[in-house]
Image 1 (cartoon, rainbow, N blue to C red):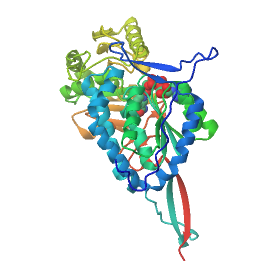
Image 2: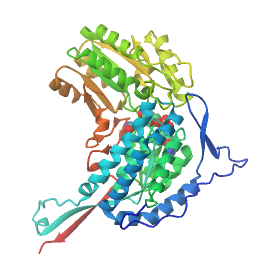
Image 3: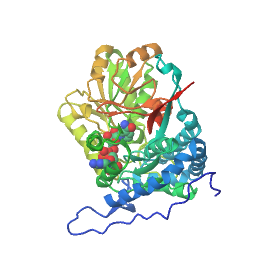
Image 4: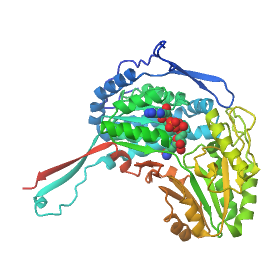
Length: 489
Ligand code: NAD
């Protein structure tokens, strides 16, 4: 491959050696990766040590200035080459995603497709987004100056990701950070590290400068990234996010946390019930409910409750569950690991023990970690299925007297990631949206905000601090702002 103009020199060959286990060290040196649908081991990766992470960050620091120096247009060439690589390798990447997640084929293809869209968005717009600002002076003192805000990237951004979309999740933040001119060290989930290694393979294959590295391992490896990088972008559970916030505060290092959710769906009496039932079934069951913005609880106005529940249950019952090959035969696959299955089972069991009814599903699906798509009714706000993030294929549904009660209950959560409102009147939907404590609200649809990189994606409350994307903010967040005053005269 022809190197892009001004490209940095190649790094020495990557070495990620597994450490030897000693008697005093119980952490495994090698992590086995399994297909949760079949239980088969599909690969092994090293648990990269803290020292190795520190060395990798030092190496990235050496190459980053040249990556910054080639500017957004130089970086665009590499990022668009990577986009081509993603397109050429979509099927192979989907194979790896599928093998370590147990997802249906169609869902596995979404991972590289999403990354392809995102890398193009930031590659093409970074120059505009990173251009200096020249605000107008407001005071007599400043009036004789030209005012400039310049954006200078953090040298090394640490990106730590969960397992639910093993290519898309890293892509959400790795590409904006690279477009900003930072080097990136990615620590993917230990449950699904193979897909991230595919991304690293692609970056090396196109001959791009060695400013993107993947370190595999569990929490300790992630902790070492937090100890060494200059900005931490974390996606994962609220519990881990809190630990990372504390560690970053100690080091005075900025961070952005994209955490868990318990997204409500509000079905108003004027809604198109077929559309709502379809959308909510998809929003609750897509990726087996393992999406941070999955629908996790549903509030339905009393006059349409019975009809809606019947339609929703029919939609959920119609879903085909199983293990796919390359052909796509199923809508729902396995859960990521046994831990997830046990959380889902506990939420269902606790609800049923407290008086809830299962209308469909409610038990394991009979292969691997899979759990049947489940609809629960007669639930309330004392139950774990309503108060805790489930991150599985369950839709607990509550009847509410009116819109005010729906809004009050939707806001009765420690989380505030996103929400959906279903109505026949878009203005009505907008009025309800503005009363919800959520970082995003989709009206008559699910996930639309996830496909709108021009909008910010960030949670309120225990769902996080900061936000990703939001057009220019998506790259500017990875930069320090510098104020420059220049005399006009
Ligand atoms: P997790 O918090 O267990 O792990 C996330 C990542 O953090 C993993 O790579 C893990 O190895 C690493 N990690 C664990 N302990 C660490 C530590 N002390 N220091 C540094 N890194 C550490 O989360 P998970 O179970 O992998 O993912 C599921 C969660 O992710 C859910 O809560 C879901 O809502 C959330 N999520 C949020 C978004 C969002 O954009 N808001 C998107 C997807 C998933």
